[in-house]
Length: 353
Image (cartoon, rainbow, N blue to C red; front, top):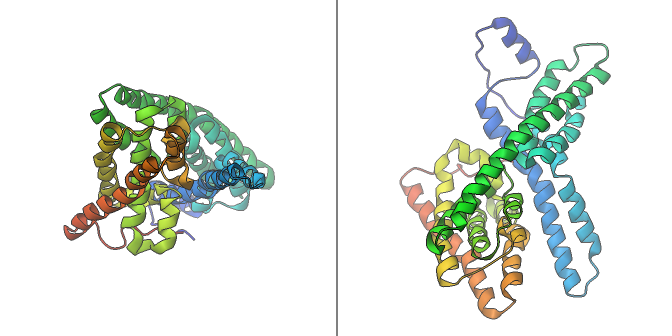
């Protein structure tokens, strides 16, 4: 169960009502606890689906009939919105009718605004659904009716705003791709890396923008640095399971910890910025839109780089160094420096499952 701290209201009556309904208007709940659960929902659907699909496609390429893995992966990806909706409602300790309605609410938000749209729509609908729950004799009708209606409206209008935000962010990234390779590499790697760890879809952003060539290569390096970097620097707190979950899953699992201590995002972000010029200037590594925002999730990013440039020994080495080895070493060195300075402490990177 999720533990909440009490919220101090000026109006005693409203405070009692909200407390009775387990609605506590706390930024800590919405931006730490709920975001952490939202990341778990995303990991269990989109990320795991991409991993299964990639494994299946790789086996098929090598003559093994693994079409069922591709099908399972595609179905999981298609249910990303509902998974996020349920994760958010679960984090907010929603009653059953609200929890089950959140499946559809997550789908509404995802269609309009991606993962962030699902998150916002589910939060609004769940809290209002909790307020309505068990207040009348027709609860079995009224609660899901209100929850679904509020979720649809929230998803539609908030999702539209999220879509505009994504478009604006895309224009900024597009501006970066028009600069010379050194600056472009640093800029795109940093922005896309941060987008991957934030509760928005860097994969969708890369595809929406049609990132390819050097820009896609830089984006892949930035995203890989976030995932491998967080996996390495949080190993003490999370062990091998946490390393794998972040290294080939998603660094979004660290969203709650980043909000608690923003210093935690510095090591992988700096690693990506430092390595991007090697990809864009020295080695001229390229990729495609599908791999640009994936990082090392399911090994999709590295595989798409190799698919774009060719499966040759020199590219295998370059991809291994820039996507795995170098981000791990640089992130760890920066982390140790911040740890000695007291900016990052033991437990700051612990993932709560």
